[in-house]
Structures are given as structure tokens and as C-alpha cells.
Length: 155
Image (cartoon, rainbow, N blue to C red; front, top):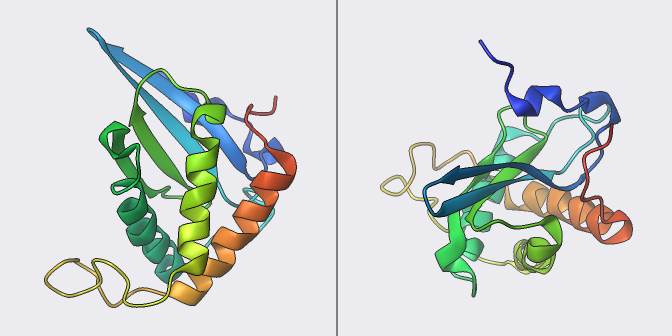
């Protein structure tokens, strides 16, 4: 079997950032997958599941309501719990979605109230949520992203 591209990224050199993970093309359609890497893999603790689950709910809600909602294909957590994927229509660069990601972070940081989609009829694991910890991780990520603007995978 072929080694998938994400396993070729040296995770020992990877820091929080917003990276183009891959581009997929079929006929006239291009989809770009972004690696929204929120923690330094294998050096920082992974995010806890309740917070990551809340980030998924909040991020998806924001992205599917923002001015680029028609370009959003998917937003969700990485299995390793060090970040999330944003999948969008278009041949895009990290700089193209940077402000949208910062705005999404600001939305989550400032959010008060009931977590969208956190009712038993809306989610298969509705009770595993933690808005305060989601805000903690997102603020840490936002500050790192704004300070360092890491857009290119390290060698």
C-alpha cells in the first residue's frame, strides 16, 4: 500500500499552524484540506475529548454560517487529537482562509450560551462537551497562529 501524504509530514518538527494538507481534483472540482494544527504533536498533551468535541460543534456551526459557507465541505477533529481538518471547495492557500479561521476562533472564544447541537436528539454523544476548555485551546491556538503564521509544513 502507498503511504498516505499526512504520514510523510515529520510530526517531530510540526508546531501549531494552518497548513495545506492536500488538494484533491476530480474533473473540474478541486478540494483543499487544511491541517488546523492546534498543539505540537508528541510534545504537548493532546486535547481532551469533551473540549475537542465542543470545538467541532462550534467550529462547524460558525463555518457553515459564515460568508464562505458554500465553500465548506467539512470541519472536524483529527484522530490524534492535535487539531482539526477544514475541507473546502477550491484550490486554496492557507492565507486565503487565515482571517476566516481567526474569526472562527474569536466566535468560539466569545461564545456564551448553549452549545449548538448538544442535545440528545442532535448528537450521538451530546453530553461529552466542555465549552470552557474549548475556549482555552482555541485561544491558545489563535494566539500562536496570529503570532507565528505558520502556513508551510516544516521539513
